[in-house]
Image (cartoon, rainbow over all chains, first blue to last red; front, top):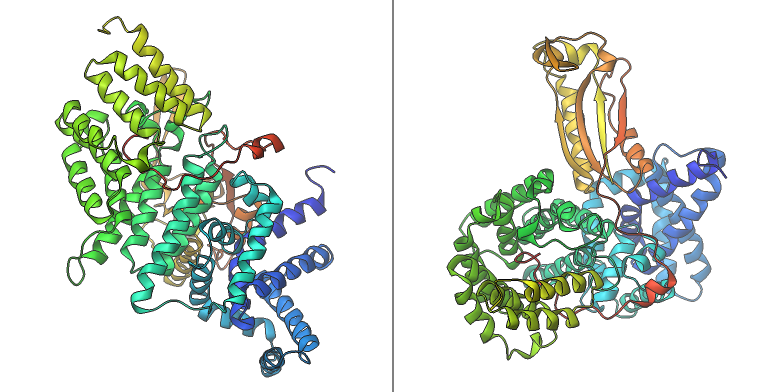
Length: 437
Length: 146
């Protein structure tokens, strides 16, 4: 088949429509059926129907309404068949039928109801996909499936996991949500903050899986970063008054702005200070800084409130983004931001990053003192960045033999082959350096 | 991948001093909001008529400046947006939902892919999939040293 084959072309168009509409269709159906797993199955059946029928009938003017209406008719059929067995299904079938009969133009009725409540339904879908009852891995897979419109094979490739494992994970997650009767709702009051942070965690995990691939031969999987950014941007419009959502979006936009400069043409990692800053994507930096401003506006109205961890990290990233050269970096501000972050979410990893900032603001010895204090931290025992940072500081202090040992230790700990190569190169440079003591 | 959506000029958009029709502005605003809500709109802007612009012609080593306005509205542009989507087809689907910029007549929008860093995600072999190891319990903060 050639690339211009009309069936292939239509197939790609249907895929594109699905990418645009699937989350809204599944969200609307979940509200009608009160079962996210069933809603997704019905939406899939509607997609199959579209693949069968659109080649003859052409793409309808309102594909979302077509997909929803088709899925809904299947829901009615299914509920009728199950009505004898279950009273709940009987009620649902009646409700759906009543809705169908009272609206002479079903498509436009669905369309209107979609338009009016779609934002709410999408947000409910985000919260149910990221429900804390599910494991983090399941939340990530389900979110990409339900909200990102990715199929199990795409998700499997993104996480370097066999496709059957991903498919199983999604099936089990949907079953868990049904078995535990997890409601399709936006959490309120005190529960909202905790549930929102679970959502942000999932989106950032997806982003990081793309940005700093934790396994395999590639340092980045940029399409996964784009999926995470898209999810973050959608969430920011759904919850415009949540500063941390804008903080996360800002953080991802600014980190993504460095994509081009982070990897050489031969696939080697380039550290922040060695990056060619003219290659940073100014469009994404601008978007990141704008998102920070949005968060600040909310944080200062009506009274000034403290910054959350994502916003703080975004502001640190923004300090780098604003500096045209590494020497222009406002390290004192970064130290303040890391200190605030460490108080909010104490963690040895943040402490290590703070040590790096201190070394830049006050010299390598000041940084090394903080790093050495972390040496006995059990959670960092197998963390390659600890010896890597220590090696760098020792190198700057002229203690090259010690630096070499630390670079080699870091290389042995990292699981990323390209990062290992970079660390071994640095270790070798300690040996050959003529100024080495 | 990114696409630049180029809105071609019309006699209407080329009229000096005339702001776009308020109704159209409203519809365009609503459309752009929909794109933002879907997380696909990276940037968008409208352009002044070509009478406020200029062209620089290069010929060997010399440069000649030609002031606007320029004729042939169809070859001029009136605005652009940058979309981040998964495929050309998705960009097309979004553009088809846009209001007609020239409600009374014809208008044209061109969709062009933006050059980007090479895709670092090659199709993975079974062997590469086997490489999957458990994710680190805590993801490192990337801002300080990456």
